[in-house]
Length: 243
Image 1: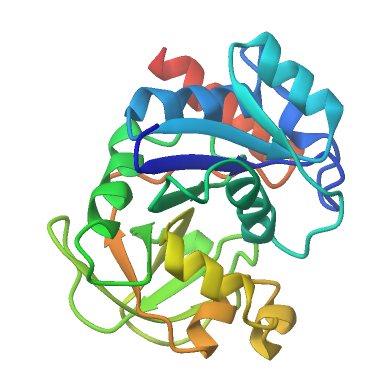
Image 2: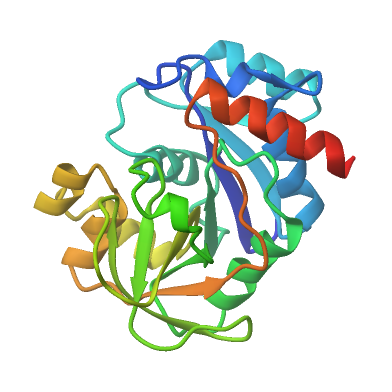
């Protein structure tokens, strides 16, 4: 096994869009699209962490690996950690938590965070992209505020994550992918849920409020997150154009 693994947390019981992972895009369930992109990145082995047999069956049918987890986890990272601890904690040094609702994420975006976490310059790294004007007030779009100038070549310190519109500079569209070291994900899981994490419903605030070294890099493209059925239609159209 490689020293790096990609784990995709996925469950059916999402509040905003139940059964989202099994929603079909151009004939293929969304979770399979994400899994295939992860495989194409060639970063390491790919697993879907899920509490649902329906998702596990679809993953298996499409030549993927799954790990069954407990139903009740407060965050996707908690679910990722359970899978990591069950199957690979003795061999894997780097863990990529890839959100299961970004079926059109680019392969080079996955490899970018995987390569950076290995430089030993942070506890966690993630990605962002340029923010569209109309998304500044969209609460479904998570924003990331950075400290220094960001370009395609560097990673910089994260200052904050939020959903609300704020009159500040150096903000970007956050992309739902995180890279951890084995040590940092253990520390994250053993840290109690933070106040802002629960207030904002943003799991990354647990790391921010507990002084993890958290960095972000810039992606060339904006992978479309599927939060609603309208998003699903938009993503399907976009992916059909690129096929």
